[in-house]
Length: 406
Image 1 (cartoon, one colour):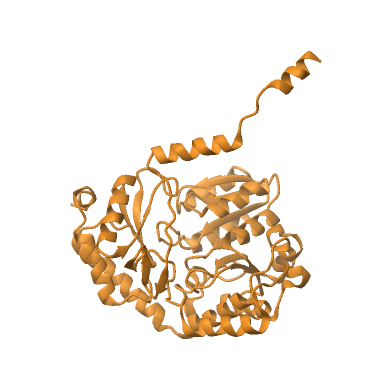
Image 2: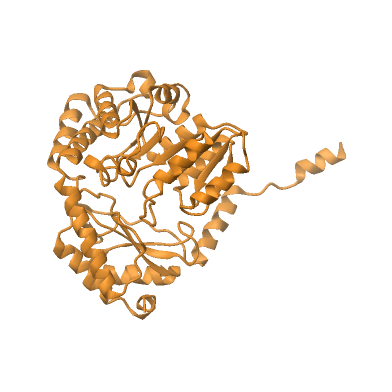
């Protein structure tokens, strides 16, 4: 009895105080994240704090976010149906706009069916938590997006992370758990490095191991492959080789939300069992209508990908002439590796003084010593915009300039 009363008197840790301590530690390390309010967007130009800045940190890879056809589709549907869907898909929130978009996404990616989610994070959590169970094995690339890692951890499966793009290491990890149900998940295009996963090799490995391959193509859809169908299509892989395909709608398509595509059996199972799908209000039907317009434009207006590819080539050629330490990437994501966080922040601030908005990416988003400028290009950029960026990069002060190749 005395022991029980002593236990009751022991103070509990204050959770909010612990959170405040963690925040203070991050501020002391000069790694505090700060919000920036954008007052107005005009194509690649953003207005913030009374300044007009040329943006090179958006994921609007095809320049569709402000396209008149998307805006018209959104307005027309909002006028007819209102703004919110008012309910989860399985109650009364699944509108004809959602159904039409799912059909278009399935056809575009060469899958039987597709299922909409409100965010990419929810799509990955839903797919991984539904497919995996305690005792299963989940292999993931060390540079995968956080939501893939979180989905595996929440499922209770054993999570093993192989070195970036190292197929041989992944094979060894499979061998360590022979007999276990297994899934290998990878980004298609890696969000911070911009390189493409070795999808054909991973697909062959999963076929040998009788494991399921899942690809998060958030940064590949719309940009890569025939008709912009993504990195999986670019690798000439279909539903059989990549049974689980996820992609987002808020990057190249300029809207919001995400989807998982695959066999009818996969989509039926997710509809019944994926908690982030079942217990969330469906995306606004106006957003679905706008996204459908974006899908059609992404497929038909091939000049957008051609213009983007030309800008990527122009930027990489110019950066090479300047001796800048670009990471190897053929995608719209062009990381400039600068090393420590202070150097990356100083470079970002310097570019902003020259009228350019470029995000500095620091730990814990990337490993210590791997801080960078994450430069992203868009079909909305003209040659003059790319040249303006290169001219500003050439003027980076000594701490950033010292990292240039010699």
